[in-house]
Image (cartoon, rainbow, N blue to C red; front, side):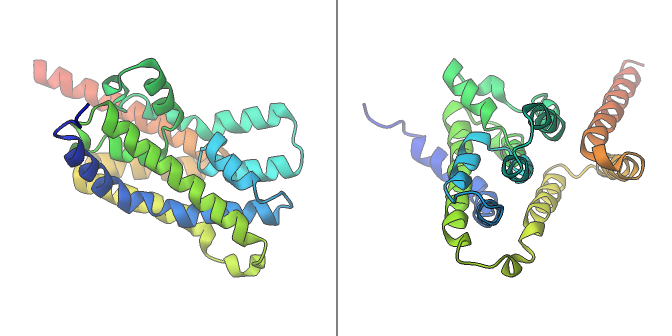
Length: 233
């Protein structure tokens, strides 16, 4: 069967949009691999964690839980708390444009912060099943690749030389936030998100992420309701 005339163009657009973010997965994955090795686990646990768990910050926590043989209940509760933000991602991620049950399952499984940021961007507004899955697959493979490299190299590096890599994930989220604001420059929304984050950090620092997301979603719902009423009036 001849290739679709737009397949090459779609591939280029996916790569051009996802590559700048995806390349950051290499040092982040390497940091995960280093952490796995220095926690006393075999290096091959790094690609296993990256491929199977594939949950970013949760994987870093899971290394400690696995190394200390934490109870299943603790692992389950930690997973729910840390990954609860994905509930909010699902509200606007274009899963409806992904056709087929297997494709939807994989897209749901690989819904990461970075995939969400790319998937809801204006540039990806016309993407269908193939581009969305290709973007998520690229992120998944880059994450596994980085973790594998880190696991293999980590055995030869002392932990003191890894200073600074722990900030890589925070830096990536900052870049994603700046890029999202550039795509949709809404000062009220940005200020609301910042206020929700600061208040949650001050009031419930142990559950900052979940509470900040919940508060932000609540404010957005109230704002949307007010705007609709104003439009009707």
